[in-house]
Structures are given as structure tokens and as C-alpha cells.
Length: 154
Image (cartoon, rainbow, N blue to C red; front, side, top):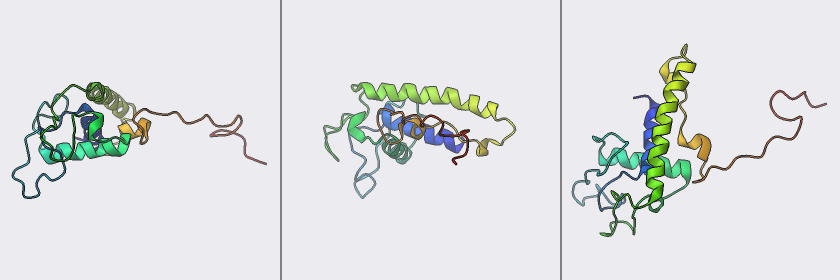
């Protein structure tokens, strides 16, 4: 799997909310017993480990500026009320659809730049549009006559 695909899968997982059972990521593996097995993985590979899923969730955090509660039933670290497998929050399914969308786009990008090796092609990922915001914000357009292709300033 190419790095962009892994990043995409990671980013989508947080939103997809296909994480773990009732324990919060914080504190797992810190002498509290074995990490739980991820549950309800619908888009991410079903054989992903807890640590791999957490890595994906951290990528969502960076790309969208969200925390666990955005997609998951999350009360607090190690709270028995946490339910990461729940599909109750709509944002989780939105994330799944976004992951699927990117999985469709990235092979097209790879074919479009076919002369380049796969590891030299930057795949589309969450950060490209979200840039740290849960809802992507469009930047303002450049001033008329400015931007790429504009005549040089005098």
C-alpha cells in the first residue's frame, strides 16, 4: 500500500469512527492489559491493529482538527461509557464515504501521471481540502490580475 493510501485510510478512519471497543485511546498499552481489538471496521482493513487504528485517528485529528467525540460516542479517557464501535453519529458514516471517494480518486491520479513511479505521486488526502477544519473552507480568490500567470509587478 502506498504512503498516500495509508494516510488516506488513516484520515478516513478517524471520521469513519470504525475504531475500538469501549476504551479510549489514552492509556492503552500502558500496563493496563492488552489493547482492545478494533470493532466495526467497515472501510479500513479488518486486520488493522489497535495501534494502527489510533495512528489513523491521529491523522484525522491533524487533518480535520477534530477529536474523538466528533465521530465517536466518547465520554472521556478510559470511561466505560465510550463506544467507539457505535454508528450513532452521522459524521462517522460521512468519513467512511469520504474514504471511499478518495480510494476512487487516487488510482485515477496515479494513471494520470503514469510516467512517474507510484511513490513519487502525491495522492489526494484529507488535509488537501480540510486544512485543519472539519468543514473545508475555500480560500478567497486572488485579486484580479494577481496569482499564477499574472503579468510581473512593475
